[in-house]
Length: 172
Image 1: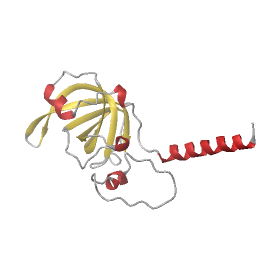
Image 2 (image 1 turned 180 degrees about the vertical axis):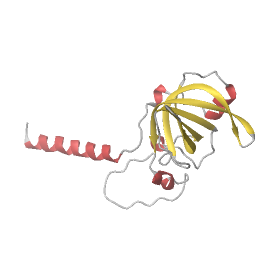
Image 3 (image 1 turned 90 degrees about the vertical axis):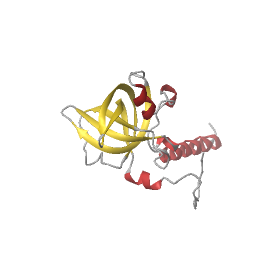
């Protein structure tokens, strides 16, 4: 192999490593999930979507650890870039996440953003204030708790952006 070719291969590998290092958050396969379903729609239709795979996200309202299972109540938002819940957009209703094991409420605290991949279980009735509410329940296969600064970094669509630096930019 010529030294020129070795240099080219090394450069490509270095760039690929740098780009992979910039990627953050989950990379759930959205082709396998029902992206047409929202928590609000599923809550209204009852049990019609049991066992359907979803990738949803939202802002934590409350985390309730149990003996073997932790339940997290979220206010759902559409997923934006990099599968971050877009909390500046209209909410899509509340839902519950159930996951095996213990999640520390100090880490999984009110206001944090979460993305979940899992299958829908039966909806459950609960209360929001004094109103009866039907919660869709997602049995979590995978959870991603976004860093606290993620919510602060999100800007409404169309807001000004200023970037200064040297490098490769990929934007959608």
